[in-house]
Length: 250
Ligand code: 5HY
Image (cartoon, rainbow, N blue to C red; front, side):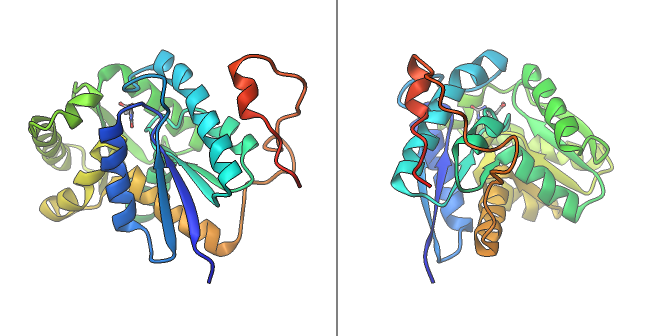
């Protein structure tokens, strides 16, 4: 049975956060799966808004290109805004999953309603836009921001993690929901512990995306190239984006 190679892309340039997510991904992945964790060399140290997402998207598409050239089977965009997801699906042969979309699918399978706990207030609208785009807005009771800079999750003090724990405990008792989604890739390593202590499903998108990706690869389904997710037409794009675009041989 051929091994599946999944590229886990952390769209920010934090190597520490890439390792946190890679650790969780490898813990969840089955024995037939190899996780290749990467992050762009240039770009934004953390993604906390629309501008950051736009800047990070070039790095994501270049990583997709490099992964395709290495022959990976699938890609995961490990940032809770799912930046560049549809553009990445156009570029890739294999499936591409965003951690927000994956977490919402998994949460809706185990609870009729869920709440999302994310980092900064300014990113709440990004999660709301995705809830509507993916059709999960009726499943979501609330999107909360802890008012936590993303990189505080990697400062080693543990304070950010304690804030997440306390906040999720309040959400359990206030929101009348059956599940909580952790709205940042940097929180990936907290889901198992919180599910146990809160005795309810606490879902992280990295783990959810790895499991869903394995299912897609086992089913042998890939991104449809019939219609809008077909490979981009190579029409002489100039500048840094041109590097994303060598069309793979059929
Ligand atoms: C993330 N930012 O998952 C998002 C979280 C957020 O750098 N990785 C980031 O707050 O949107």
